[in-house]
Image 1 (cartoon, each protein chain N blue to C red):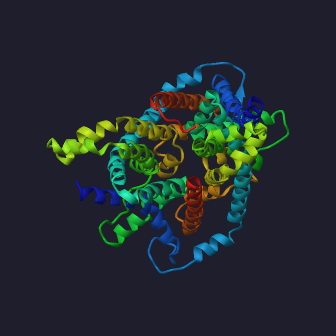
Image 2 (image 1 turned 135 degrees about the vertical axis):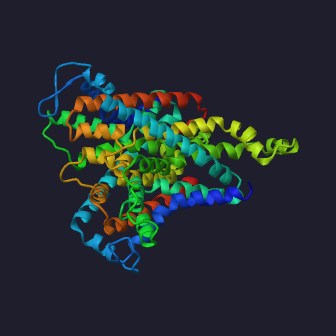
Image 3 (image 1 turned 180 degrees about the vertical axis):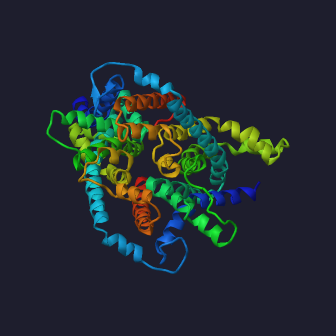
Length: 252
Length: 276
């Protein structure tokens, strides 16, 4: 067993990483087909020159930034509030958003927006996508910030209060400065989740708000296309880097 | 503290009420209404949408969803346990190995699913290599079947069982294993009679963590099943888009939601540590 276990682990790591590595290798392949023909960046060049992709990437970026700013701000405040005193209702609700199937969240938001729009003169668009993303990112932000708060000493805030500070002072001057790394980590996580989402986004996006995952999905459905390999590799590297930074920040 | 705390919790509470509970309430209401002529809903109340779930056409989809999720969960447990055992015993490289498990998980779900399409499709890597090597004359039908969907589910959710198993394995008292060896147990017996029973709660936690997202899977069956392996998630999407039968789609959503919530509550009851 001493020899078998490392072999098995190596095979499993290969299973987890090989599909992504293969994608990356074939993204720099000269040939349009799945035959190695030599190194080339032509598919990256093609991806960069595609105006539909550029627009979708820009939309994804704007949506992810907006959703991240809002969900990080309100999620961090929520974590602090829950740290002060638990609320089983709120905690339970946040857990529920985590386990709700994405497709169910997507169709319920679609039904909700369409129902609202009967009374308001609005349409599906970037704003509805941002609202949806804010909602499903909050729980992740709360979990990350809460993990940091759990390691902190409540006596520090008590000292601040004893010394004549208000509760707001205690939060702003004592706890918040120690929370920034966790908040930054949560923000990076929220950004990647938002940037990557396809299922919910595709249900609540309007005609003018096609995101990068939506374009990739359409291209993947249509058939083999090396441009998808190029964008996919760029996304793996980009989001992977954000996640590694996020993990580092969480441990500081 | 109460005022400040209330102020801090209010935005999240408001967001959840407006964008989670209100939409869910609408789905509940729609599930008891009738489909309108041009899509949409009309005001006639009915429980027809729930009865239709037992039609053989839709019953099969629900059963397939449960079966595929159960098999995927079982495979994840079986494949994940030895990996978790390896990581827990790898000393200073533990963190590196854990990251190796987690990083593909965090990078783009869509891209990871697409990566398997790239490998499995008729013109994909596996078929291209086998054709070029002369092993096969026709491309093997690797994509668009139950097996491909199962593979995608296991690939996506394997980390969910590795993490809780690792956390438990790491805390197992070494003296228990030494005692087992001293009393003449072979390594294999120590695993099956000491380690695995000690991991029972982690197996349960991991099973729930995999089973829940499998039940709601949409992208995996959509891309790797190609419309042939329809799961509940695809049925819901179809009812809200192509079929334009929102009341029935709502009923399917709620049934799925009910199963997920029951599992979540059962899992939380048995869990001592909370994330939140």
